[in-house]
Length: 132
Ligand SMILES: [Zn+2]
Image (cartoon, rainbow, N blue to C red; front, side):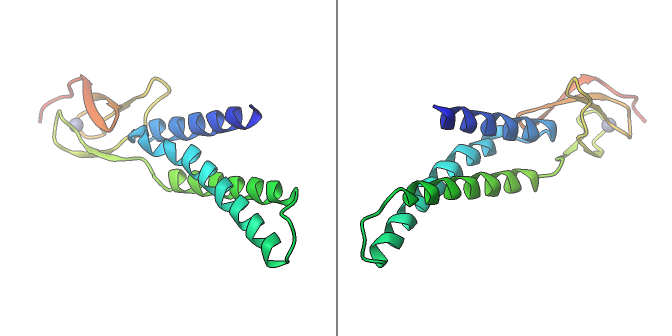
């Protein structure tokens, strides 16, 4: 139960990070995916470790699984963090701009001043800017 809560928190954090940079949020699933994948890989490694030493796998398998899950979560976090703010073409003036949204999720084109909102990797014009 505690683990499900931790995975949900991880997913939510990654999703918010991606939204902040105007990126599609699908990549947030790397969190739960690498957590569970890391956990299974860790458990398998723990069992293999015990077998190599000619003994029954014991409680240390849980330790391997937890370490694997943590490694998976850290890798997912690093991958998501490496995705910087996305560049878009302003639909109002055609200029390239980097999405740096305010707390309402809007940003402004530095060229024409259009008010823009980026959702799911698509640019939406809230208010058109001045034409040259
Ligand atoms: Zn513009």
